[in-house]
Length: 97
Image 1: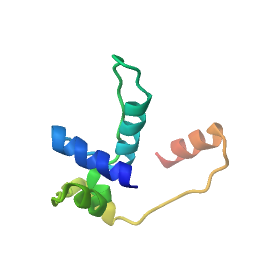
Image 2: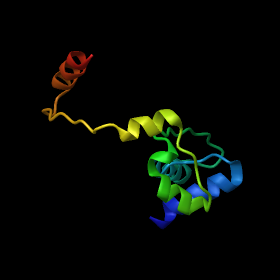
Image 3: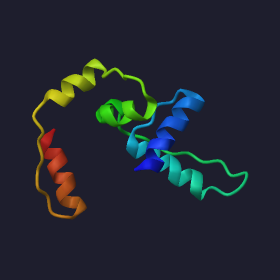
């Protein structure tokens, strides 16, 4: 949405740090939730190039896709249906390794 796009643009302009849309959402939640004088931290786990078109439109600049991410994005997507419990999730992860 417009607020997330504005956050991506503003953070990039102010610090040259490039947020992805999910990271921008976390940044905004932290910014809104902090009390005066309180420090905070937010985590972003996606590379902005995963949302290349969206991020580029926010900063009006082309971004480069790292080689590793580009190769990953070309692979076939895989998903596995799992029941909603941790034991099944853990078992699936162990069996995939």
